[in-house]
Length: 399
Picture (cartoon, rainbow, N blue to C red):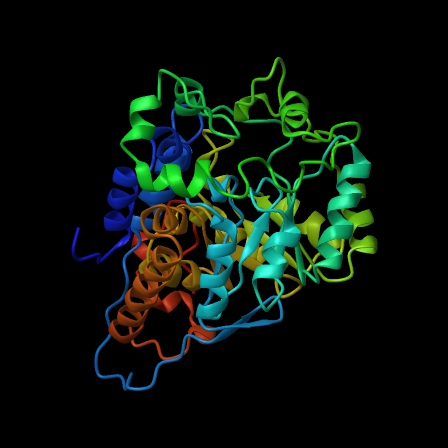
């Protein structure tokens, strides 16, 4: 593929270069994938208002996200197993984001640990926390994030228990990757991936290896995560289903930086989060990977923005694949967007250069959309940018 022009090109290149089990892990949604499809359907249905006769010779994408200056309203979302798409994947993605001038968020279930990523970049990054049943482990993760000077803590609220994604079941996804009769040919025909990942520095959950009480070996960690040595993602049993608003209040007292809740889809929950003193809310359905049959994120974004007003920053996640999507989310009230799948495909396709390429594509698309809609400053975008008649059902047409 000589010319890469869009998200679909990077996705296709990734499909060729990594094993099916990893490609499907990024691609798949929960159960029947109704919510996953709704994310794209509702975003795609929104139409822009093309405007003419407006001086758009000077356009600015610069903004601030949770107090951090950014070259455009975009951040790299926390994604699990990033380092299994390319060796040292989290480090490469963090470097690409830093060079581009946007935030990077490291996930709890990353392959590279917090300390390794921090030592590889000049600026601190955000950290996403999964609350664990073992509260001492959760506390340890917090302390390590503070030591790494992470300015933002994102708490994942939408995964009280593991979800089910059928492709992962069928492919036998495991951490670290296991070479079996089922996937041996797939691995053999992906020599670049094999070299980068299977012989890389990290192949297990870097933030958890050696940190789990009573467990100090990878094999022991895998038994802790699952049972009988199985490590399928669906077996992850140590997430804490008892996480409540009282815990968020405790985190607010303990965390010295910005505190953000990820996975909010209901206006009432947004109000409760704001009452806890959080700094931001990420409207997200986990990319359609957790609750199937829930709403698309773009369809609930305006009501959540209205519910919290200017008390907290509202960010948008799930389904973002282009600069067009970013402008649509901003038009409906988001401060910025997070992108996950798209940068994973870029990473899988070309390593750090692939993440950079993905960001360049989004920036170019966003710039064109700005010019064609008469938008000069992304900090001043309103709903006038889109055609009200094309908004998802239930969204008020009032500007």
